[in-house]
Image (cartoon, rainbow, N blue to C red; front, side, top):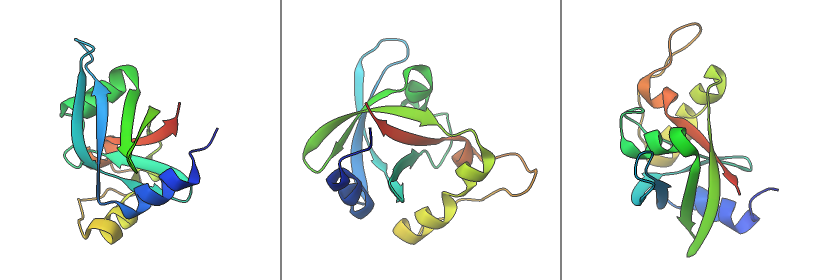
Length: 124
């Protein structure tokens, strides 16, 4: 089932949103402000500094989250993006939306920390 188009539109427009993840050890809810990127009908988040932060670690551990957007609490599942080309495809949209750029890899180079920490959010 796809996202409500209004959620995708708002995510494309908003610079920052909140996401609640659930602790990998405690299960406790933890809300963070993050950047969000939309490519077509797909919604992505990434940690610019890699997987070392708690929220991406929580997504890796259980994949459950709540996206707070458009005044709504949207339950989501996070799909860790492991395909190198898909992870690298985040650079141009992030640069365009935020005027921010992280180092990028290419070809057979290992993924950068930001590329390793890309998640697609899927409606639950």
